[in-house]
Image (cartoon, rainbow, N blue to C red; front, top):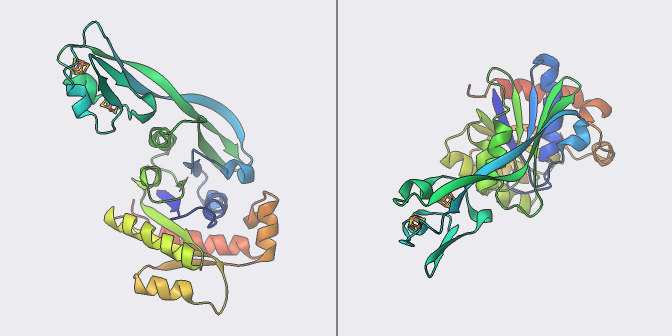
Length: 282
Ligand code: SF4
Ligand code: SF4
C-alpha cells in the first residue's frame, strides 16, 4: 500500500503530514516504511530521528566514448533526448550531469564506440525510528539529476506493507518520479491564493496520471472557506483539515512529532489514516 504525500509548492506542511502519518500507520501496520524522496533537501530525519543502519551509494550508468572507434557520425547525438551529447568537429562530448543513463546511445552506435561507467549521484540510507522503517536519499551537492536517486529510494518500498512516500515539492519530474506507482496521492495545501494556485497545478498532474487523490488543508482556519470553495470547484475531495495552531508550530519548530506532543493530534491522524486506507488503490 503506497501513499504519496505531495504538494504543488514547498512549505505547505507536507513533511509534517508524512512523518506523523507514518508514525500513526506504524501503530496499526508494524511493517510501515517512511521514504523521503525529497532527495535534494530531505528533512524527515529531523522529526523521526532514525538510527541509520545502512548506507549505500546510488549510481547511474553514463557513456564513455572511445575516440579511436568513433567516426563522429552523430547518431548518438541525434538519439539523446536530454542533449547530454554534443558533436564538436570530429569528437563527441558528454555532459554527464544531463545524462539520464538510458543506455540508448550505446545501442544506436554501430561502431561499438560507446561503453558505460558508473557515476555516483548520492546515497540511500535506511534505518529505524521507533516502529517506522526509515529510508531517505541524499543527492550529492551540485548534482542535477534527482529522479534516478528517487527511484533507488522507491526500490526500498516493501510490496506487502504500508509505504508512506514523502515526495519532493512541485509538479516537475522529481515529484512525478516519486508519485508514480502510488495507490493514492495526498495533496497538502494551505488556504492561501498561492497555495491553491499550486494545488491546482498538482491536481492537473495527478489527474493526467489517473491517480486516486485527496487534499489535506494545512493551517486551516475556522470561518475561512477559500480552500473549500476551490476544492468544490475543482471537484477535489478534502480528506482532512489540520488546524492553524500555535501549539503545532511550536512543536514543529522543536523538531518533534505533533502526533506525540500536541493534544488531539493522535486522534486526528488516526482519523486521516482510516480515511486513506479506504481510498488507496492496491
Ligand atoms: S554513434 Fe558512435 S560513432 Fe557515431 S558519433 Fe556516436 S559514438 Fe561516434
Ligand atoms: S545514456 Fe541516454 S541520456 Fe545518457 S547520453 Fe546516452 S542517450 Fe543520452
